[in-house]
Length: 356
Image (cartoon, rainbow, N blue to C red):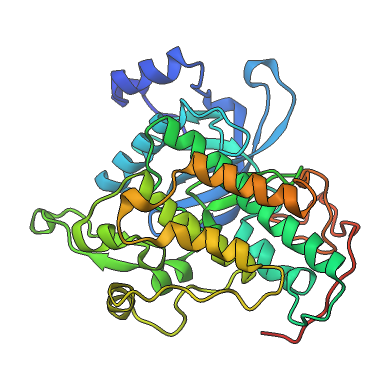
């Protein structure tokens, strides 16, 4: 259970915002169990919420600081305040906040039983990769529709965030979570230590001499203007979306494999971009839409609304948008094995490929 704490120590403005939004969770209603994810600053627990607002017992995810620090506390509070306004099926929703572990807090969110899109894709590579161009065109089309429909869900979530003038800055397959209905939700928690060490580099803070923690940046997903000038906008998120689509069609491969962060910048400045995924399900038309996200000039990149329109139009040509809320994969990545099905009936023929 959450420990006792004197709420008079919690900033009154923060408490007022939580209270007015009906999001302040009492300590006796939440109980933590096992850890389901860790990042550099945070740790995510599987938890049980019981009796809050008179509701029945609910399994949730509770995010808090791994080790308290003023910088981490500030980020966690800001994250919870930003999430208060989110209300879209493809964006992670805030259930509430428990400040009863002050000076840290618990951010409580829905529990995503299938984990991140990245881990899901990697687990199910054999179901989604087609290398032989002689494969049945119906199978190729079906797999392409399913992967492209995943991208559309992410795009819809980002379109919503852009409408709120919210810049994500860290869009990637690892930050897209999958719920029990296979709805994909843009999120920003669930990062693991090895993801940080491999895909991020440390940018020194201007005030590091004053004790501020250096910032880690997701170089492999960042636009050139973000890397060179520290500029972030909807159009830099669009660039990251293109990389995320590349992850989807490569079934979770790491962008720019074998390249260090500085080499990636030089590679991009030469006009090079991620190559078309070696997956027949990624058509030339799909890859052309993805490439639009990586134009040098931000104003020449499409908006998320324009991308959603393009994806919908191409899906119509392919036979229509697939409702991914109906489970279809033969294997699932599950955050907990307790009371969770381990087999999901497939609805398409499995295409087996060599291990990659």
